[in-house]
Image (cartoon, rainbow, N blue to C red; front, side, top):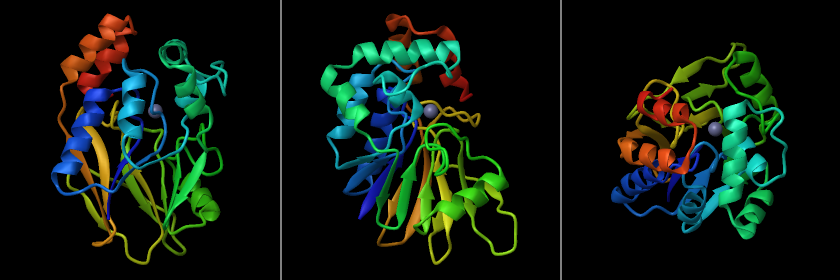
Length: 244
Ligand code: ZN
């Protein structure tokens, strides 16, 4: 079984399609796991949602999904994010907003728990420190947890008596899952923030018991043109080219 794990797609259809093409070129893909923020920031919320839902999809809600469907207010968003969330909600049909409203905050698939931010604060926490990783392992009922939200690809291994260390994952980083407990962030498919503008995702191969990070080039200029036509904030388009 091969699963494409994506997060923070943020209405970026070119990024998502490039990732899915890459995953499907390597063999049959049996499902897509999405760690939230399907919408927000980017120009095509409806098309991205449809592209994901054409696959066997397991998805959890991110803060932008919750804001776009009205399940969460935008008071805690900065102005640009708030405007983009409201705009995204307006592009979606009532049925699409209903789909987002019904998304769970966490989901378990096999040995993996999926969540957007962290298990203690699914919608909001950026899991980036050793203290936060310890809290996550404490709450984690499965061997592995998958998080997004920070848009940074990394992994953390639980080590007895040691403060957990964050390890950056780049293109081609491959992990044997083994017996250990792990926190894994696939990075962002639609708005990377680690200085590498290529779309990021993880491919899970259950036969080989491995996860592999991949960085995929996509037509950033096309996404930017669509954002400009939609009247979205210029900075949101500019940041795609620099991966920030
Ligand atoms: Zn996000």
